[in-house]
Amino acid sequence: MNWIAHIFLSELNTDFQIGNYLADPLKGKSWEDANENIKKGMYVHKIIDSYTDSHDFFKNSKNRLGSKGLLKAVVIDLTYDYLLTKNWEKFSNIPINEFLDSFYINALKRLDSLPLHAKTPLERLIQHDILNQYKTLDDLEKAFLRVDYKLSQRLLKRDTTHRYIDIVSSNIHSIEEDFLIFFPQLCKEVKKHIDDDKSNHIIV
Image: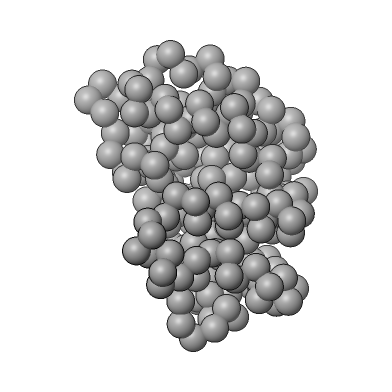
């Protein structure tokens, strides 16, 4: 899963959400004086990724992109954020604009408490409003291009995310069917590991 899903599948605690997000750019490693909510968020991030990667319907979605490809999992992660945005009301009792605006406002207040290597990716996420850029297939294509921009030339010679945009677009209804079966199951799994009283925004 990608960033919107990780921030959503968190307790409604800003540090927990930040930790769940930062586990990706920081490779799952917290810093020495990170608080417990940051650490818990990073821990849940790993649970989400492990459950997702092993799930049959996530694998189904990858297989819809063809038999070969190094970046199919990344493509489906990004596509599932698009589909979560599209189907948000099925999974949350807080409107998406309200949820994301609240995260941005509260995360901005926490920036100065973070070490530079953690502050930088979070600040970029907020400044560029990345979480609101999964609303259309055109947005998704731009997300693929953002990923490719960060990849090494060596990897780009072997695969790119942008090359999948046409096959994703032509298979989006089938991928959405996979997602709508998979994501409620992921929500239930995550709820086992977080505080019920702090995760009432997640509808299961």
